[in-house]
Length: 275
Image (cartoon, rainbow, N blue to C red; front, side):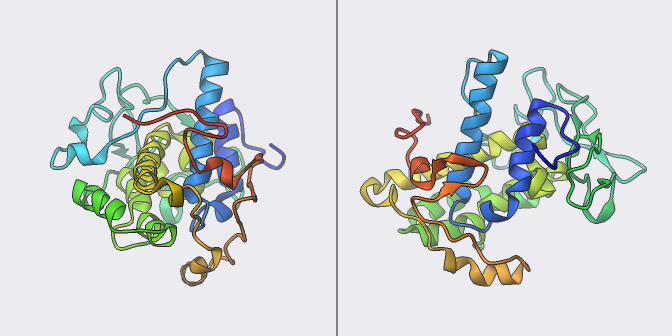
Protein backbone atom coordinates (compact mmCIF):
# COMPACT_ATOMS: atom_id res chain seq x y z
CA UNK A 1 0.00 0.00 0.00
CA UNK A 2 1.45 3.43 -0.94
CA UNK A 3 2.92 5.28 2.02
CA UNK A 4 3.05 2.22 4.26
CA UNK A 5 6.80 1.72 4.25
CA UNK A 6 6.81 -0.77 7.11
CA UNK A 7 4.48 -3.39 5.60
CA UNK A 8 6.36 -6.66 5.10
CA UNK A 9 3.71 -9.38 4.86
CA UNK A 10 0.24 -10.12 3.50
CA UNK A 11 -1.06 -9.76 7.05
CA UNK A 12 0.44 -6.27 7.17
CA UNK A 13 -1.67 -5.33 4.14
CA UNK A 14 -4.80 -5.75 6.25
CA UNK A 15 -3.28 -3.94 9.22
CA UNK A 16 -2.47 -1.05 6.87
CA UNK A 17 -6.02 -0.89 5.47
CA UNK A 18 -7.38 -0.57 8.99
CA UNK A 19 -4.73 1.90 10.16
CA UNK A 20 -4.99 4.25 7.19
CA UNK A 21 -8.77 4.40 7.56
CA UNK A 22 -8.82 4.58 11.34
CA UNK A 23 -10.62 7.92 11.67
CA UNK A 24 -13.68 7.40 9.43
CA UNK A 25 -14.38 3.86 10.69
CA UNK A 26 -14.37 4.52 14.46
CA UNK A 27 -16.82 6.71 16.36
CA UNK A 28 -18.73 6.50 13.12
CA UNK A 29 -21.97 5.14 11.65
CA UNK A 30 -20.00 2.55 9.68
CA UNK A 31 -18.05 0.95 12.55
CA UNK A 32 -19.93 -2.36 12.44
CA UNK A 33 -20.41 -2.61 8.68
CA UNK A 34 -16.79 -1.75 7.95
CA UNK A 35 -15.43 -4.36 10.33
CA UNK A 36 -17.87 -6.93 8.97
CA UNK A 37 -16.32 -6.36 5.55
CA UNK A 38 -12.80 -6.41 7.02
CA UNK A 39 -13.27 -9.82 8.61
CA UNK A 40 -14.85 -11.06 5.38
CA UNK A 41 -11.83 -9.93 3.34
CA UNK A 42 -9.35 -11.52 5.74
CA UNK A 43 -11.28 -14.80 5.75
CA UNK A 44 -11.44 -14.78 1.96
CA UNK A 45 -7.67 -14.26 1.75
CA UNK A 46 -7.09 -17.08 4.23
CA UNK A 47 -9.25 -19.41 2.13
CA UNK A 48 -7.97 -18.44 -1.32
CA UNK A 49 -4.31 -17.82 -0.51
CA UNK A 50 -3.59 -20.07 2.47
CA UNK A 51 -5.88 -23.08 2.11
CA UNK A 52 -7.88 -22.26 5.24
CA UNK A 53 -11.19 -24.16 5.21
CA UNK A 54 -13.16 -22.68 8.08
CA UNK A 55 -14.89 -19.49 9.13
CA UNK A 56 -13.52 -16.95 11.59
CA UNK A 57 -14.62 -17.99 15.10
CA UNK A 58 -15.98 -15.51 17.60
CA UNK A 59 -14.87 -15.14 21.20
CA UNK A 60 -18.05 -15.40 23.27
CA UNK A 61 -17.24 -13.30 26.31
CA UNK A 62 -20.56 -14.17 27.95
CA UNK A 63 -19.54 -17.83 28.20
CA UNK A 64 -16.53 -17.34 30.47
CA UNK A 65 -17.72 -14.89 33.11
CA UNK A 66 -15.96 -15.62 36.40
CA UNK A 67 -13.32 -17.82 34.76
CA UNK A 68 -9.73 -16.51 34.71
CA UNK A 69 -8.79 -15.65 31.10
CA UNK A 70 -5.75 -17.93 31.31
CA UNK A 71 -8.21 -20.83 31.55
CA UNK A 72 -10.21 -19.86 28.46
CA UNK A 73 -9.43 -22.21 25.54
CA UNK A 74 -8.39 -19.30 23.37
CA UNK A 75 -5.86 -18.03 25.94
CA UNK A 76 -4.69 -21.18 27.74
CA UNK A 77 -1.47 -21.51 25.74
CA UNK A 78 -2.38 -24.91 24.32
CA UNK A 79 -1.52 -25.84 20.70
CA UNK A 80 -5.00 -24.79 19.49
CA UNK A 81 -5.07 -21.52 21.43
CA UNK A 82 -3.91 -18.03 20.47
CA UNK A 83 -1.39 -18.01 23.34
CA UNK A 84 -2.07 -16.15 26.59
CA UNK A 85 -1.21 -12.99 28.48
CA UNK A 86 1.99 -11.05 28.01
CA UNK A 87 4.99 -11.10 30.33
CA UNK A 88 6.33 -7.70 31.51
CA UNK A 89 9.91 -6.96 30.50
CA UNK A 90 12.48 -4.48 31.76
CA UNK A 91 12.10 -2.29 28.68
CA UNK A 92 8.38 -1.71 29.37
CA UNK A 93 6.95 -4.29 27.00
CA UNK A 94 4.54 -7.10 27.87
CA UNK A 95 5.40 -9.74 25.30
CA UNK A 96 3.60 -13.00 24.63
CA UNK A 97 6.34 -15.58 25.18
CA UNK A 98 4.54 -18.94 25.21
CA UNK A 99 2.06 -20.80 23.03
CA UNK A 100 1.44 -20.72 19.26
CA UNK A 101 1.95 -16.95 18.94
CA UNK A 102 5.14 -16.76 21.01
CA UNK A 103 7.17 -15.81 17.93
CA UNK A 104 4.54 -13.61 16.27
CA UNK A 105 6.29 -10.50 14.96
CA UNK A 106 4.45 -7.20 14.45
CA UNK A 107 5.83 -4.83 11.83
CA UNK A 108 3.58 -1.78 12.04
CA UNK A 109 2.42 0.58 14.73
CA UNK A 110 3.66 1.56 18.18
CA UNK A 111 3.85 -1.05 20.89
CA UNK A 112 2.88 0.54 24.16
CA UNK A 113 1.00 3.50 25.54
CA UNK A 114 2.84 6.77 26.21
CA UNK A 115 6.04 5.51 24.64
CA UNK A 116 6.34 2.26 26.61
CA UNK A 117 7.98 -0.60 24.77
CA UNK A 118 9.15 0.22 21.23
CA UNK A 119 7.95 3.38 19.45
CA UNK A 120 7.50 3.50 15.70
CA UNK A 121 10.09 5.52 13.73
CA UNK A 122 7.26 7.30 11.91
CA UNK A 123 4.75 9.47 13.72
CA UNK A 124 1.86 7.87 11.84
CA UNK A 125 2.97 4.40 12.89
CA UNK A 126 3.36 3.15 9.33
CA UNK A 127 7.14 2.71 9.40
CA UNK A 128 8.87 -0.62 9.95
CA UNK A 129 8.93 -1.36 13.67
CA UNK A 130 9.48 -5.06 14.28
CA UNK A 131 8.42 -5.93 17.82
CA UNK A 132 6.69 -8.57 19.88
CA UNK A 133 2.99 -9.23 20.25
CA UNK A 134 1.91 -7.55 23.49
CA UNK A 135 -0.98 -8.34 25.82
CA UNK A 136 -1.94 -6.88 29.20
CA UNK A 137 -5.19 -8.48 30.38
CA UNK A 138 -7.50 -6.10 32.26
CA UNK A 139 -10.22 -8.29 33.76
CA UNK A 140 -12.14 -5.26 35.05
CA UNK A 141 -13.33 -4.73 31.48
CA UNK A 142 -15.18 -8.05 31.48
CA UNK A 143 -18.03 -6.54 33.49
CA UNK A 144 -18.99 -4.66 30.32
CA UNK A 145 -19.07 -7.92 28.33
CA UNK A 146 -21.29 -9.98 30.63
CA UNK A 147 -24.41 -11.75 29.40
CA UNK A 148 -26.56 -9.18 31.19
CA UNK A 149 -24.84 -6.24 29.52
CA UNK A 150 -24.71 -7.79 26.05
CA UNK A 151 -28.37 -8.81 26.13
CA UNK A 152 -29.30 -5.42 27.52
CA UNK A 153 -27.57 -3.67 24.65
CA UNK A 154 -29.43 -5.90 22.19
CA UNK A 155 -32.88 -5.67 23.76
CA UNK A 156 -32.96 -2.11 25.05
CA UNK A 157 -31.95 -0.21 21.92
CA UNK A 158 -34.55 0.02 19.19
CA UNK A 159 -32.73 2.03 16.54
CA UNK A 160 -29.23 2.26 15.12
CA UNK A 161 -28.48 5.52 16.92
CA UNK A 162 -29.04 4.11 20.39
CA UNK A 163 -27.56 0.69 19.58
CA UNK A 164 -24.38 2.15 18.13
CA UNK A 165 -24.02 4.40 21.15
CA UNK A 166 -24.27 1.37 23.42
CA UNK A 167 -21.74 -0.57 21.36
CA UNK A 168 -19.15 2.16 20.96
CA UNK A 169 -19.57 4.96 23.48
CA UNK A 170 -22.27 4.10 26.04
CA UNK A 171 -21.71 3.33 29.74
CA UNK A 172 -21.38 -0.38 28.89
CA UNK A 173 -19.62 0.03 25.56
CA UNK A 174 -18.56 -3.34 24.24
CA UNK A 175 -16.21 -2.36 21.44
CA UNK A 176 -13.66 -0.53 23.54
CA UNK A 177 -13.97 -2.97 26.44
CA UNK A 178 -12.93 -5.91 24.25
CA UNK A 179 -9.77 -4.18 23.12
CA UNK A 180 -8.84 -2.79 26.54
CA UNK A 181 -9.41 -6.19 28.16
CA UNK A 182 -6.79 -7.84 25.92
CA UNK A 183 -4.55 -4.76 26.10
CA UNK A 184 -1.04 -4.40 24.72
CA UNK A 185 -1.28 -4.45 20.95
CA UNK A 186 -5.07 -4.08 21.26
CA UNK A 187 -4.65 -0.79 23.14
CA UNK A 188 -3.84 0.94 19.86
CA UNK A 189 -7.04 0.93 17.87
CA UNK A 190 -5.52 1.78 14.51
CA UNK A 191 -3.06 -1.13 14.60
CA UNK A 192 -5.13 -3.62 16.61
CA UNK A 193 -5.47 -6.04 13.63
CA UNK A 194 -1.74 -6.72 13.95
CA UNK A 195 -2.61 -9.81 15.98
CA UNK A 196 -5.19 -12.54 15.21
CA UNK A 197 -7.34 -12.08 18.33
CA UNK A 198 -8.67 -8.93 16.66
CA UNK A 199 -10.67 -11.09 14.24
CA UNK A 200 -12.33 -13.04 17.06
CA UNK A 201 -13.24 -9.85 18.93
CA UNK A 202 -14.91 -8.34 15.91
CA UNK A 203 -16.61 -11.60 14.97
CA UNK A 204 -18.25 -11.47 18.41
CA UNK A 205 -19.31 -7.86 17.83
CA UNK A 206 -20.65 -8.89 14.42
CA UNK A 207 -22.64 -11.68 16.09
CA UNK A 208 -24.18 -9.18 18.51
CA UNK A 209 -25.01 -6.89 15.58
CA UNK A 210 -26.64 -9.79 13.70
CA UNK A 211 -28.81 -10.71 16.67
CA UNK A 212 -29.87 -7.09 17.13
CA UNK A 213 -30.75 -6.79 13.43
CA UNK A 214 -32.71 -10.05 13.46
CA UNK A 215 -35.18 -8.71 16.02
CA UNK A 216 -36.60 -6.27 13.45
CA UNK A 217 -35.05 -7.10 10.08
CA UNK A 218 -37.38 -5.03 7.92
CA UNK A 219 -36.20 -1.90 9.75
CA UNK A 220 -32.74 -2.68 11.01
CA UNK A 221 -31.27 -3.89 7.74
CA UNK A 222 -31.84 -0.35 6.52
CA UNK A 223 -31.05 1.62 9.67
CA UNK A 224 -27.87 3.69 9.85
CA UNK A 225 -27.08 6.15 12.63
CA UNK A 226 -26.90 9.73 11.27
CA UNK A 227 -23.35 11.12 11.22
CA UNK A 228 -24.20 14.23 13.23
CA UNK A 229 -24.93 12.23 16.39
CA UNK A 230 -21.18 11.67 16.63
CA UNK A 231 -20.25 15.36 16.62
CA UNK A 232 -20.12 15.82 20.39
CA UNK A 233 -18.12 12.73 21.25
CA UNK A 234 -15.68 13.41 18.41
CA UNK A 235 -15.12 16.91 19.75
CA UNK A 236 -14.42 15.44 23.19
CA UNK A 237 -11.91 13.06 21.63
CA UNK A 238 -10.39 15.93 19.62
CA UNK A 239 -11.25 14.25 16.35
CA UNK A 240 -12.53 15.92 13.24
CA UNK A 241 -16.16 15.75 12.09
CA UNK A 242 -17.63 12.30 11.40
CA UNK A 243 -17.71 10.94 7.86
CA UNK A 244 -20.82 12.07 6.00
CA UNK A 245 -21.98 8.66 4.90
CA UNK A 246 -25.26 7.15 3.78
CA UNK A 247 -26.36 3.78 2.46
CA UNK A 248 -24.88 4.42 -0.98
CA UNK A 249 -21.48 5.59 0.24
CA UNK A 250 -18.44 3.43 -0.57
CA UNK A 251 -16.56 1.93 2.36
CA UNK A 252 -13.17 3.55 2.99
CA UNK A 253 -10.51 1.11 1.86
CA UNK A 254 -13.06 -1.11 0.12
CA UNK A 255 -14.32 1.25 -2.54
CA UNK A 256 -16.19 -1.47 -4.46
CA UNK A 257 -18.43 -2.07 -1.43
CA UNK A 258 -21.22 0.30 -0.44
CA UNK A 259 -22.53 0.73 3.07
CA UNK A 260 -25.81 -0.94 2.09
CA UNK A 261 -23.88 -4.03 0.95
CA UNK A 262 -22.74 -4.62 4.54
CA UNK A 263 -26.15 -4.55 6.19
CA UNK A 264 -27.01 -8.25 6.00
CA UNK A 265 -24.82 -11.35 6.34
CA UNK A 266 -27.04 -13.25 3.88
CA UNK A 267 -27.08 -10.80 0.97
CA UNK A 268 -24.68 -8.73 -1.06
CA UNK A 269 -21.16 -10.20 -0.89
CA UNK A 270 -21.92 -12.33 2.18
CA UNK A 271 -23.52 -15.69 2.82
CA UNK A 272 -23.07 -16.70 6.46
CA UNK A 273 -24.92 -17.01 9.76
CA UNK A 274 -23.76 -17.52 13.34
CA UNK A 275 -24.36 -20.55 15.56
